[in-house]
Length: 145
Image 1 (tube, helix red, strand yellow):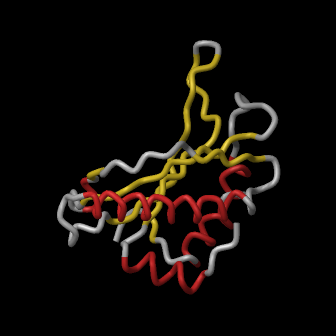
Image 2 (cartoon, one colour; image 1 turned 90 degrees about the vertical axis):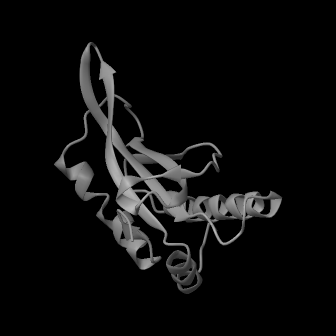
Image 3 (tube, helix red, strand yellow; image 1 turned 45 degrees about the vertical axis):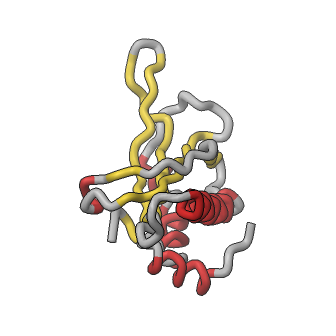
């Protein structure tokens, strides 16, 4: 899905959109194996709207926007990988690194396209650099604002 970079940059700044990339570790044959990465997108909950059905709609709209951004990354996934966007979850989250400001988050898994339990290597991490650059281009900040 195509997203308008200029409009998304404006939206990302207004909503303090950020992203985090973490290790995805699973147990395989009794040992922990890093099988990929987790990509989490965050955006501020519109706290200027008091708790109400209108705020709930705004939260859902925020999550939908994060989904559009994630879907645009899927179209650019690195060769040999698959990006699996998690299910709808527009609950408010609170992170220490963002001063416990209410946020909405979306999580995706970045895994091997063929063998789920094949351990990732340094090259796999390097192949994610274009996704990180794309997120920066769209105005999302690494970590938090």
